[in-house]
Amino acid sequence: MRLQATLCLLLLLIFELASCTHLRVIPGSTVDLPCLSIQTEFTEAAITWEFNGKNITAESPGSTKIKKDGLYLTISPVTAANQGKYVCLVKDTNMEMIRAYDITVDASVHYTIKVFEGSTIQLPCNFPLSSQVEANALWFKETAVGKKTQLNTGDSSTDDKGRVEQLYPLDHDQTIILREIIMEDAGIYTCESAKGEKLSTVYLVVEVRPTFAPHSCGITTAWEPCQDENSRTGEPMLQESMGEFSMKLYSYLRQSQPSGNLLFSPISIGGALSHLLLGARGDTRRAIERAVCVPHDFHCVHFQMRKLREKLASSLQMASQIFYNPQMNLSKSFTNQSIQFYEAEPIKLLETSEENTQMINSWVANKTNNKIKVLVDSVSPSTQLILLNAVSFSGQWMVKFEEKPRKGLFSKLDGDMVKVPLLYHQKYLATMEYVIELKAQVARFALTGDSSLYILLPRSNTATDLQQVEEKMTDTAVRQMIEQMKTAPPQSIEVTLPQIKLNVQPDMNILIKKLGLSSLFEGANLCGLYSEDSLVLDDAKHRAFLALTEQGVEAGAVTALSFSRSFPSFSALRPFIMLLWSDHANVPLFIGRVTDPSERESWGADRRRK
Image (cartoon, rainbow, N blue to C red):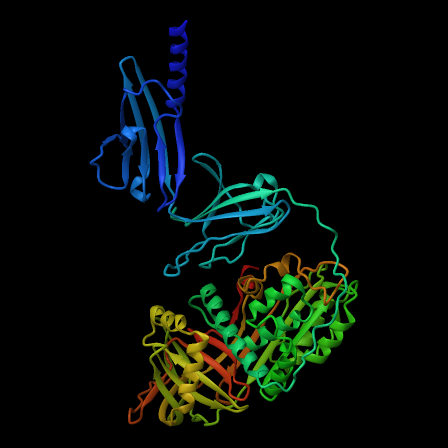
């Protein structure tokens, strides 16, 4: 009987140990592979290990080591070279046992995310910033060992009913959002490039949602009063926050659109978000404060925004407004403070999409002196709340350019040349410096309205040199540049600029998500604005118009130009960055990039998809 029992045990061992265990490990980790899964009496048996068919010995190079006479194999640290099949072979006089491991080394970035059932979560993934984004990454969910199914990141017409969405298409950030999570969503998700390079792995753990009380704002109060309106620190604090916010916006926008024309008004976007901040409470308030770079205890932010808008009124036309569903009873305190600080009484939406579209665009045209006539194409009938913003700037050169029409060739990033009308002056009085910290030639042109236009010219027309300047444009570097230019003496310069007339509408919805405010679209705490239910931001728009032209000049015949070089020259006939700065308020009004001055209008990614 003892022989029969032993034989039965051996048969069990052969069956168990002959199976292959699949392991996924990450670089830099330590892995111990046991040869035997249970204690046996065969301590005198010979144990050998193989890796991809070759014997492993104590003298084998690399990070693989045999321990305890072969009972364990240790790999430390794990590298990509350790990927493959490991086999432990145990031989005794009357017995042979095999145990196999199939190891996959996952070099992608790893995340573990725990979330409650019914929640919305973002799964992170990023292309290296040094790479060019030619196609969106592919997302997969593992269904079994070695098997996976691709996620459909399309719109609401897909089988996933819009639960999965690509947040930033054709961006270095390939994060997706997964809505209304169910228990079956738990598992391993991988993000890969179109070439199959793994970029990130997300381990999603779904837990049963605890029971929460119904939505309640409790007692809501107005925004805290500004206790010291005459404080000398309030204005510099807002200026510093606006500078940091501006460069953050430019960084996000240039990543989303690495080569095209850009134009936005940070003072306008910041004003719109601070307007919304007036009604935000709890986590939503803290998120917006972080987004616009203001301290949490800066109670005077709205008072200072009003002072800033008043300073800019002579040159900048700026309008911010909130349109809301008439079934909502907005807080009286919010309405009063909206009028007090932003000169904007919230407006009720009308009955039809057509009426609302016409009402909003008429309002925009009126607020911008018809420089911007169309901001929205349509308004959804289910809209609860719309946050709108529109700005325009018109500045005259303090030193006039010559009136003779000229045309020249502008060299684009790809080397193509386009004919453009020029602004030319042989002896323009301006400031020009090479700013080492930015690796750019910078010229400052004075404008009416106590403003200045800074043009940052990279060393060449290549994308690499342009990106190098952009990467160095921190808020500190920009302010140091402005101080350097203010102290430098003006000189007579031969100036050649392309005439610029840009009308740009960046994708504000994507920008808001980039700012860490995705919760606005999922359900925000805007109890200071409306206390009866949670609110969802339906849409956000921003449109910027900037014209820097020679008044009354029309395009003339094409002429070949041959300029004399008797004076220092500044020729912006290749891609450049421009910064429109209010010297009076000491804040940026517009930031832009010109890569093709012949392109008069640029739209956000959301509009192009439509």
